[in-house]
Image (tube, rainbow, N blue to C red; front, side, top):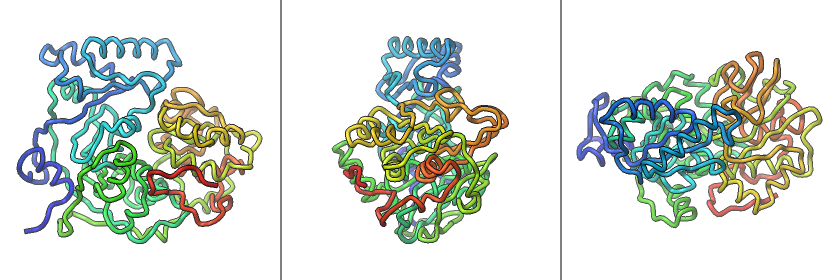
Length: 436
C-alpha cells in the first residue's frame, strides 16, 4: 500500500480516515480570518441569516485592518469602524491599523501551525501552506459560515508534487523560484490542486521564501501550496515562537497525480511581464525597460529577508533620480526588526519612502499608485491591467533583489550586477541579522 501525501495526512488527522481525491468532506477549522476588503460582505451575511449571527469560538477568529490602512478614504474609515464594533461585540481578535498584513501577522503571532486547517476571506491565505497547514482562501459568504460554525466543506484536491533539486544559487530568491514554475504551468495549470513541495532543494529555501512561494500558489490556480514541517520549519518555529513544532511531511512512497522537477542551480532571475503573472521571462530578456516606480512589499515579499536583499543592493547607492522607490514591510514586527538592524536607515538613505503594515499600492489603494503609461517593478503577486493604478500603466513582478536593482539603475537590470560575494539572498538560519 502506497504511503500518504501531506494533503492526505492533513485530512486524515481531521477526519480519522484518508478521504478519496474529489470527495466532499466537512472539516473543523483551527483559524478563520477576514480583512477590511472582505469583512463587510461576510458581516452582511451574518446579519441577514439568524443561524449565522454568532461566532463559534472567538479565539479562532481574527480580523485584520490591512488593505487600506490607515484609512485613505471616508468609506474605508467607516468599514474600519464596523470591524472594531464587531470585534468588541463578539470578542474576536482585531489586529488594527499598523499591526500588519493578515498573512504575515498570522505567522508573526504563531496563529498558523503545522497540521491546521485555516481559511481566510482572501485568496492569498494560501501563504500559510509554508507552515504545513492546509490554508486556503474562501469567499466572504463561506467566511461568514466558517466564523459562525467553525466548519467548512472542502472537495479533496488532486495532489501534485514539485521536487526541488540541488542548492539554490546565491542570487536566487523564492520569487524567482515560484515565477519560474508559474511561467511553465501557467496561471490555470494547477486549478484546484494541492501543490506539495519536496526534495533536497528545500534545505536551501528559507521560511521567508517559502511564504512567498506558497503565497503565489493561487496564481497558478492551486487550492493550497504546501511545504513540509521539516528541519528548516521546525528551527523557525523554535526561533520565532519557542515552539517545538511537530515533523509533518509526505511519505517517501506517496503517490501523486503528477510530478514536476526543478533544478535550482539552473534558475536565474526572472520577471513576470505585463499583463499576466505567467508571462515570465529571464531578466536578461527585458533589461533596459525604463522604470518610474519600484515597490518592495506586500504579503508576497514584505518580509525581513526581502529587505536585507534590497539593502545589500541599495547600500552606498541612491535610487535613481526620477524613480520612486516605495518600501512597505508587511508588519510592525518585521519593521521593528529592520529598524533594530539598521536596514530602515539604509533604505531611507538610499532615497526610499518607507512605511509599514499595509497592502497599499499592491491593490491600488494608496501610498503609491501609478499614473498614465507609468512602469513599475513590483514584488507583489499580480500585474493585471490597472492593478496598481492607471489602466495604461504596466507592472513587472520581480524579486526584491531585482526590484532594488531597478530602483538604482532606473531600468530593469539583472541584480547580479550589484551583488558581491556568494552570500545567499535566501537565508535559512532563522536567527540571522543584516550582513553587508
